Every structure is written in C-alpha cells, then in structure tokens.
Length: 307
Image 1 (cartoon, helix red, strand yellow):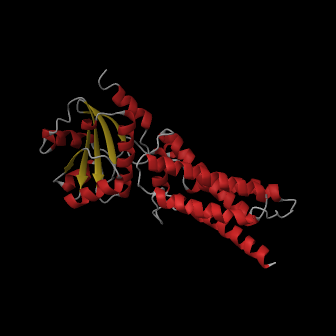
Image 2 (image 1 turned 180 degrees about the vertical axis):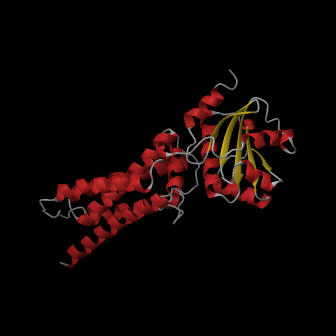
Image 3 (image 1 turned 90 degrees about the vertical axis):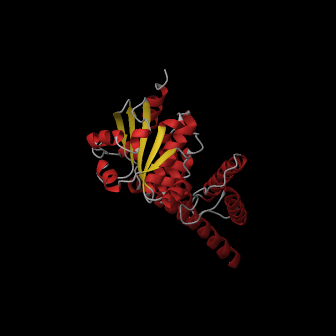
C-alpha cells in the first residue's frame, strides 16, 4: 500500500513538473519562440507554432500523468519527449551553445549541460512507475481528448502567434518626414544611410521587446547572409545600457549610435519602441514593430540588394 501510494505521489509530482514547465514557457513565450527559431530547423513563422506545440505536449502529458489515465501512453510519451529534448541539448553542446534552454521559462535559467542532468533525473524517476496500471475508467479517452483540446485552446488564447494575429499598422509609428530630416543632420548624416538598402532600428536599451526584436533580426542576418554593414541600431540610453542590451539580447553587434537628442528620437517613433525600418536610397520601404517582423519580406528585401 505504501509503495503504491509512493508511486502515485511520484507520478503526480512528475505530472506537475511538466505542467509547471509548460506554464512558465507560456509566460516566457517571446524568448522561447526565438530559442526554437535559433536552431534554424524552421522558419520564424513556423517556429511560433512549434514552440506552442511543444508546450501543448507538456501540458497533455502532465494532465495525463496526474489523472492516471492511459498510463502506458503517457509514460512512453513522456520518455520520448525527454529523449527528444536531450538529443536537442546534445546538439546544442556540439554547437558550443551555453545559453538557457528556457525549459522553465525565465524563472530558472539552465544551460544545456544543466538541462541534460535535469532530464536524466526525470527519466530515472519515470522507471519506478513503469509497471503501474491505469485507472480503468470508461472516460479515460474522453479525459485525454479534453486535455488535448483544453491545452491547445488555452495556449493559443493565452499567447497567440505574433505573425498570424498582429494588427500592427506599418504606417502608425514612424514619423517619415521627421526621420527624413534626421538623415541629413548630425550625427546620422555621416552614416550614409541614403545609400542603397539599409535597415535602421530604433531601440531603447532598457526595452525588453527591443532586445527580442534585435535577437530576431540578428538571427535572420546570420541565417540568410544579409550584409551586416547595412544594419544600424539607433539607441536611446547610455553606454552602459548599450553593453547590457547586447548581452541580454544576444544580438550580433552592428553599427550602432547613441542618439544624442532623446526627445527627437522619441518623437520620430511616436514614443513606441522598437521600430525597425527598411529603406532604399533614403526612402522608407517598410516599417515593423516587435510583433510583425516578417522573415520572408526582410529576406526578399536583401536578396535584391545586389542583383
């Protein structure tokens, strides 16, 4: 009886670990999406979906373990997920990566080695419950189907994918006329931003969304070979803030400038940061906010740069 109770308690605990892990990922969705994208197995858009599917899988397995229904399916599914994650972490180590895997969102930062140890402990804890029997309830498949539906709806409602739901107005933030005058005034006049195709990013060093936008753009540039000299970061902040921005965003370092006239910088973007601008020969072609950056548009923009 005690042994049976202990195994049941262990199974519930493992289920709770999965559920907590999934919920914390939802709270840290922006970074988790980019972590998935950073391996470049998928496009940016599809990475949004893959990130949510991974969370849904964890929720379903967690609910299944706690409900004690379809035990063998939940056991094998949990082990398969842990093995899959572990293989990804081994690949990350081979790439030399040391960044957090976001397995517990931003709440607990674990590098690939630490996360592999965590997965090993979890897999070891699953072996004592392997021979447990499921509850023989006639509603076990209904519970499973409801868990899948509730998890899917919950995740997509709590955090809709950006590029599929963004209502960002591309002409809403940038004051084009003011920006045009800025290009001819110091210090921007020395950067030759009117020559050819350029990406100009308006960032605040303390803005978390700016950091995430910079990480997105940096990954796109690395994956698709955009010319790095055509990317410029205009910062509102100070030198210490700029250093922290690059560290937090994990962005490659591009040409950057602390814009001296803060009020003018804020005015040109209507107080909204970040703003990412594609421009050609000094003419604004496209404007993006954090939520609506489109990989294919930016890729196409640069693909035609040196035809």
